[in-house]
Structure formats: C-alpha cells, structure tokens
Length: 351
Image (cartoon, rainbow, N blue to C red):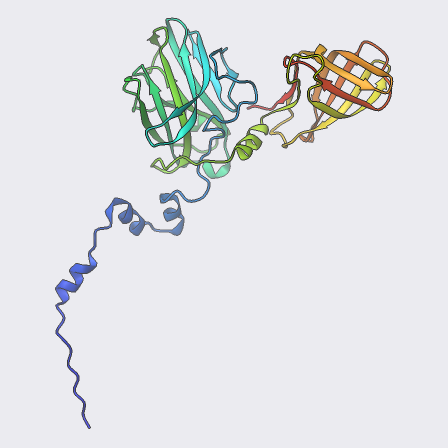
C-alpha cells in the first residue's frame, strides 16, 4: 500500500533571512576569531591585570590618608614609584565613589606650589616571555583639575617613551582613559603609569592634581572591567618586592610591639637572628632599618636596648640575617621586640 505524505511548502529565502540575526560588533569579532585563544583574549578570560596593586589597597610603607610630601624616585603605595621634576608635591591614599558605582581606593598627587616640570606615578614591570611583542592596553579612572594627565609607557619595551593621546578634560570629574600600544621584543622591564605633562615640561599651578583609581594593564586592544583581587593576594604579590619584618606599633614604652624570633647569642653584646620572609623575594634585597634604638633584646639575663641593627638578605631569597648590637651583656633564650612606631626593619627588592 502506498502512503502519501504532504507538508507545507518552505520559503527558502525567508528561512535564510531568519538565520541572519544581528550579533553586534563583539559577536562579529568572536565569530571571525581564528582560534580559541583569540576568543579567550577577546572576552578577557583568566587573569588580566599585569600590574600589582592597581587598586591602591596595599600600603606597607605608611598611612597616606593625609597629604605626605614626596621625594623623587621613591615608593609610597606598594609598587608605585613617584617621578617628578621642577614641582613639589604630596601624595594621598583616599577613598572615592566612581561613576561605575564602585567605592575604591585612589592615589592622588597634588602640587604644593607652582613650577615648570612634570609629575608622574608609575610602576616598573618585570617582563615575562609571553609579554614580548604583544599589543597591550592601559586603562584607569582619572580625576584632575588639569587637562594634561595622560598615560605613559617608557623604556626599551617601546624603544623609548610613548605617551597616550587621550588626556583628561580638566573638569575635576572622574573620566575613564585608555591607551593601547604594542610592546617590542627582547627587553626585561618597562614603566607604565600616568603623567601630568604635554610632551614637554608644563607650567603647573599650586594645587594642580591628578587622582587615579583602578589602573589596569592587559594584553589586547580593548580595556576590560578592572580585575578585583583580594587584599591578601595583592599583599603577597607586593611582598615579593618589599616586606616589613618587624615594626613597633605605638609610642608607649610599655607596649612591646612586634616579636622577632629565632635569635641567638653571638657574643656578649651581639644577638643574631635568622628571620624567614613571608614571600620569596625577586632578588637579594637591601635591608632597611629605622629607629634602631627602639628595638630591645630580651633574654634570661635581662633586657637591653639595641644600639645598632644590620640586615643582610640571604642569597636563597627566603630569609634575612639580622644583627643587633646591644649596650650590655645578653644572656640566652633571646627574643627581640620593637617599641614605638618609629622603629622598622624591612627588606627592599624593588626593580
């Protein structure tokens, strides 16, 4: 028996038209990508921000919630170096509400007098092989009363210095700025940051400022949303370059401050301790000591104030040797405490 089946006619043109749904620029880019890796980069998947402490949350060197005078080529907020000429300035670590709804930490650099020069906050970046020859985008929220702030990348990475053409309007409001460039091959480091200048030195008036937040450097030609990392992760990344080993916590002589352990008696007036780092350092660090006489050595023979402190980083990059010279004979069972917020023992392995 023959069975006949009928079905409605299909308009092929209409069916094909239905398939041509608009996908937008981003969708078109995804469809045209040649490889999964290219698609991965387009959507900004995985870890993106090459910079450390781009959110200015880590400040091991001090509390800059009030304006603090800065010196040239020095570090304040972790991993961020100050570079300026012909201008006196201060730095502040503030909290602000951005137009995107985020409440964030910021770095504000403000001139404290008029002058002709420039001022810049920048980060020196260790380059890994995968960064060589890549197109990168630098982005941040910027607020200023000057129309000069712009991005800058400097060093062998781009054959010298390169400044972004996009600048702040100077209207005192938050604006989102971006800058895209291509890195070269065969270099070991470069600087990236925000500079107030116009290609040469500029006339800066008293109280001219630039405030920046959520700074991000990433591979690709577009700026993706800022990558938020936990405070603990950012701190550990920053401690690869700088770490506080001991510090006093207030000016009261009765408050014994932070404890340093593993000390032994080397001589009647010398105590030696091996102190492990929390994070392996980038290179053998330089020791930093402030307020040496605020450290006290305790032992079964009594306690004594240090007259000198010396710090030597070990070539293993995992520990430091600390020598404390004291004014009286020390006994056994030693430990060391810092008294007063002026005392500090740290190691510095910055680039």
